[in-house]
Length: 136
Image 1 (cartoon, rainbow, N blue to C red):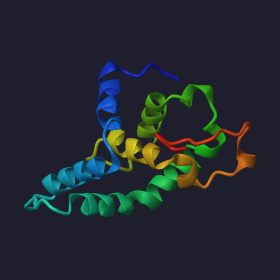
Image 2: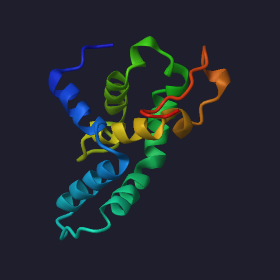
Image 3: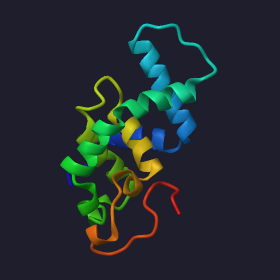
Image 4: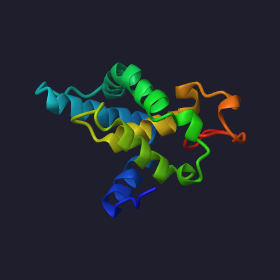
């Protein structure tokens, strides 16, 4: 895997330290600024989640089918969260145009890519307990 630039590592660290509610609030803030609508505080998490949910079919296809996550999830190069988030961000950049791919990939990794893609034990070389950030 290619070296991850320092700026990308810093961006990943910034998002990785946030909880999902905060990340969805950021999605909503970016969405509202791009759509030139009045930003109304109060339902940021729900609006951000709803906007994220619109991408799910495209994200699932790009990550699970095109990028073939289930087959590569035990790749030694993808075992640390920073490298995984960067790899997913590269894979989805054309799907989330106008939004930081690292933000969206961090949400996906925090939610758990194994469940998101519906990976089966037969699709991996060795079983691995838990896969998302903080996933048990």
